[in-house]
Image (tube, rainbow over all chains, first blue to last red; front, side):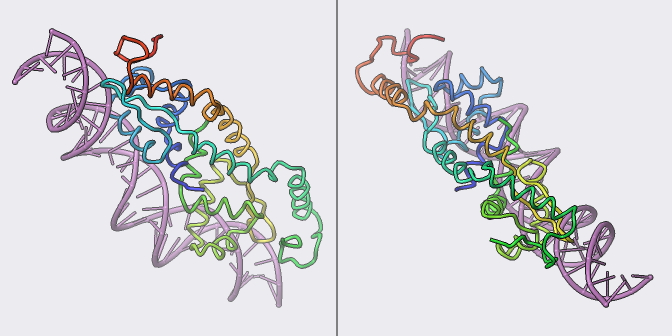
Length: 118
Length: 118
DNA sequence: CCGACGTATTCCTTGACAGGAATACATCAT
DNA sequence: ATGATGTATTCCTGTCAAGGAATACGTCGG
């Protein structure tokens, strides 16, 4: 997974823009008006989003209509999917194990720590 | 959606740490050794991740074992889900519409652009 | 109590980035 | 061509974050 995508979304204003564009494509001026951000800042943020592959431009008359690209969101989706085991019950059991090992009498006597490891 | 989570994941080193922790919980020193990052930097990055709610600590003996929290990943997952329409065929049709309105003979004859509304 | 180990924090320097303001650039209407 | 509209870029400034190095802190073993 490329950190750039997350970096682009990690800026509050940019995230707002993305969430606005989720509804429908918008021109630069539109975005600026709706979110009450000055136009130059919008242009700059859109540049970052574009270079991160999050949005693309569609020139319409003299406006530049921006819309979201699907790819980065698909990527994030499948990346997050690779963490599914986190909310499987498996983890809760591991977690419970660690906690008991912590407070209580050491479950193993190799105080080195890691429960059995991998 | 809170930009903080994305910001935490938007730093390459931090993303590497997260992807390492996806396999199994690790102590600070472990992480430093595996990723060949100096221990203080690891501590700092873990601090950011912790304050963003991405990881939690589990003190084991004199080590501090860090593991991922499920919540932020669930959040991201459902947030990304709200973009599903992006890769639905619906969008492709909207996209096609915009393109035709642009290059071809105007689908509507107010060449000003925006298809209706606003 | 003391030394050793694992980790956190501090100070410093440097580079990146966001917002403001002004301005350049492109395109359309007349 | 000219003015007007929509957008991009530039310059400036302040802030913040990351890496390096040194050091403080906490906990365990003897």
